[in-house]
Image (tube, rainbow, N blue to C red; front, side, top):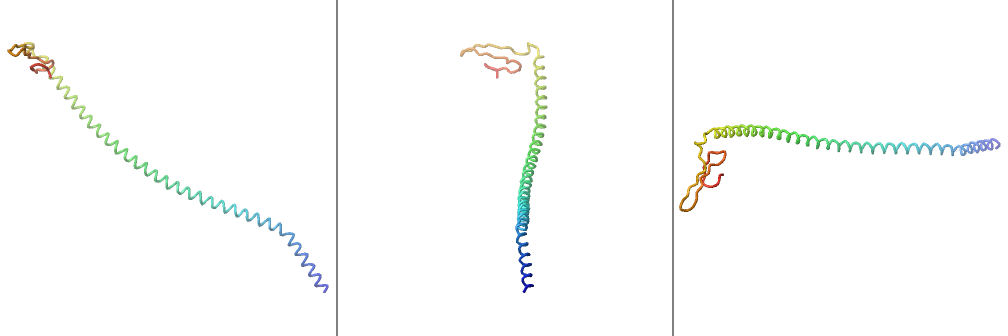
Length: 147
């Protein structure tokens, strides 16, 4: 019996030690649980950030495509404007040539002697006075008003 009592005492002693160490083990477990929660939160947060970044990348790629399309449109417009400017240059050259022709004709008109060029002429009729006008800078002779 004495052996049974000693065994029982040892068992109680061991149980007491185990019970005393339980708070320390609970504290260790608590720290592990907290650490695991933090790690899980960081992992979850990282996944959210990664998903948000992926969405941002997709959105940015779409924006880039829109910008590239706009740039292509602007380049097309610029080519069209450039072609129009070439056309305007041709029109301007034609206008310059036309103006030179007008200047040449004006010089030719101005070189016609005065007596060859008719002057204004007043003629009376039974209906009244008719004026034949020599219009300035032209060879046009009209009845009444110059055009």
